[in-house]
Image (cartoon, rainbow, N blue to C red; front, side, top):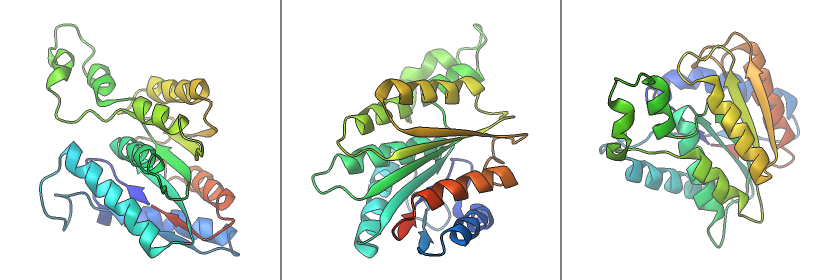
Length: 227
């Protein structure tokens, strides 16, 4: 199940997602991999206006849709950039339900720790006021908080941290700190840095596609829904 970034929408991502799905299915000939992508409210043809609360509800409905339509399948959540925070929150919330879905893996592509952290990273100068205005943020996606909630569950998904080696948007310290959080929380994870990739290229370059395909193949012992 795929959660895109705030500057993207489903149609531009479809060729990229198709390439990854094709590569994963090529390795997983004994299992059927199905990919579904969410268009948040206010994106593409979805009605409404985007907000953190609304997108959280959309993400939960999306996971429940996958459970209903693919009841025998394992589920992999995949989020890119700010979508990584959305995917992590959806994973934590879903695993916390009494009848939680079979989420076996979580892909965090070019992730960052939180919106507050990114605000400071993008505007580090002391004389620029934006980083001091974080209490007024309308969105506060916090991956560290979500990972702590995931770590508190009895059944934890394996995590893939997919970083862009030449990321011009998210500082390298963000994925390093998320890796440290995973270690501290005792979460099973793998990290792969895509050489020469910019922020939006991690899953389109050949090595990134292969890393994703290998990870998905690892979790395709049963039919899987990649969302």
